[in-house]
Image (cartoon, rainbow, N blue to C red):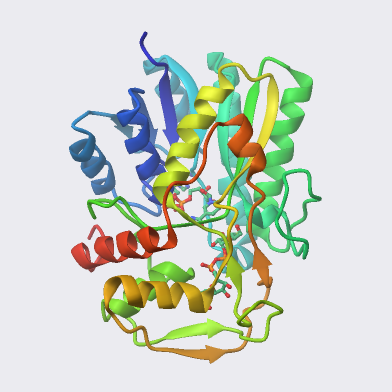
Amino acid sequence: MMKPLILVTGGAGYVGSHTCLSLLEAGYPVVVVDNLSNSKAESLRRVEKLSAKKLFFYPVDICDPEALKKVFMLHSVGAVIHFAGFKAVGESVEKPLEYYHNNVYGTMVLLECMREAGVRTIIFSSSATVYGMTEKVPFREDAPTSATNPYGRSKLFIEHILLDLCVADPSWRVTLLRYFNPVGAHPSGEIGEDPRGIPNNLMPFVCQVAVGRLKELQVFGNDYPTPDGTGVRDYIHVLDLAEGHVKALEAAETQQGAAIYNLGTGRGHSVLELIRAFEKANGIKIPYSISGRRPGDIAASYADVQKAEKCLNWKTQRTLEDMVRDAWNWQKKNPEGYA
Ligand code: NAD
Ligand code: UFG
């Protein structure tokens, strides 16, 4: 049977490009809309090369209703996976209007286009950031939510908009996927994470130190109540995350209303553990020094993954060693990213 066509917003980005590959490999036809504000179309060419399949690409901004409508008119879309948005926490504090416009208004435009086209299935990229400053780990999906910055609030607002929509019209099928910390790359080294400027996140920073683009890593605090004092996170290989989206699509076929899932490994690793794993797997020393805590960071964050395992029939396969090896393989093969 022909699989439904999937519209992927933000498909040229880091998580999006890996998910497009998993979708094509699973036999789904794919249409990408991406305004390339934080990515390059080269990622999609490489996805086509890796899968030996074609996808449709439109350089469209989701905030542009006319352009987006045209895409829905040209293609018979079965479901939407919605990645498009801005994601830098610090920048969101400086540019709240830009963040709410792009993330919240952009999602509104998308949902109105979907409604008009009769498309009722959406999978949304939410974040573990919606668990706020909670100290009780692991995080379960029914834990209270809150946010401490405009980026996190934009995710929370969108979650509420989507949940309200399901209450008003039960024909919608909404899946909120709360990602923990996506890292790594496709093992081919053809696609990976290509941040603009100096990376905010740990793994791309470590990779750029390893490749010589940055001198030294700052470890943000070693006085947290964790085994070695450094922050603990649930790092998840981006390919496990991508496969989680395919599973969520399958589950949505028989789903009623809304569902929320954590996508993580269920295991936490500290900053020092990640550095050591990187050094051991790749045979490279990572110079670092300890500096003060980064404002807004919590001590530990990791997922309770029982719900995703049970309801999505999905479980991560890849280890921390796989993550650091694949991240470095991508960086080494593409020292300047896609440029
Ligand atoms: P990314 O920046 O690599 O990908 C986002 C893509 O959306 C980019 O290609 C960008 O060009 C595009 N985009 C942005 N605004 C757009 C618009 N108005 N119209 C069309 N395209 C637009 O980020 P990512 O890491 O792949 O994250 C994907 C999604 O997952 C984001 O919504 C992000 O908030 C969420 N998320 C990411 C992480 C993470 O650590 N990477 C964690 C939790 C949640
Ligand atoms: N860290 C350092 N040095 C760095 C960068 C990070 O020590 O240069 C530490 C942080 O303090 C933290 C850990 O490494 O303990 C991971 O930090 P990241 O910035 O990689 O990831 P976060 O968990 O802070 O943030 C990520 C996403 C956010 C999202 C959040 C919760 O980047 O968008 O997870 O889901 F909101």
